[in-house]
Image (cartoon, rainbow, N blue to C red; front, side):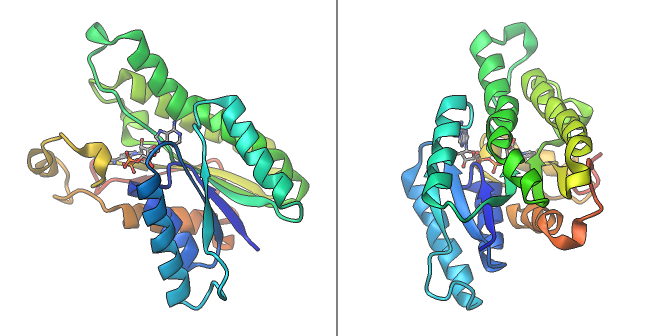
Length: 250
Ligand code: NAI
């Protein structure tokens, strides 16, 4: 079976990626940190998508893998336990999607706002990828797709913490790609602009949409299409790249 791990898969972009992967026949490991009901809903939508395409053959489209990506030990233990329970399998696709934002002007930013955003958006890349990169190299095949942001490309005021984390993630993408390309592993990033998810709750969406040349927010499903393409065999020569998906805002 082809196994994909999606971090932060309980809602938003992560959920859309999980459902898309299930519709393509992957066995999807849905990581999340706290919202059990939302994660169960992702699982149900995945099963529906797989069954609709007659791809699950009665077996589950995936499973939940609850751990905090900001915590190295917890991440290593959860993935290690899964691997021990499934000795014949390996995770060939990783989508580092989990993320948070805690916006503030640097002038007012408390240490916790800086460090929590860095830990969740950037340290998580190390915590999760570190567990999976060796099996990918050994099997001579793998895909890592990092969900970065417009903020990591141009920097956005009020988001020095988030911009730093996503900018770091983009640089790490390019570096790791060069380390593993010879082993047929690709590492790419997607950089969404404004996507309609819970993360943008509280923003003035009508006013912001006027600043986007496409005049609308993107949909999680549109990001999932791009991620699924990068995960596919068709994208095997795209490596170390960051692809914007932002309605021409940048
Ligand atoms: P969301 O807030 O709807 O979903 C975030 C997901 O991450 C949730 O499933 C949550 O459980 C999970 N998560 C958060 N902290 C975690 C932790 N410590 N361990 C494990 N899981 C954790 O957000 P959305 O919009 O779906 O964002 C997904 C990714 O896309 C994030 O990395 C975000 O930075 C990025 N992004 C979002 C944009 C947007 O406009 N919505 C724009 C650009 C990037």
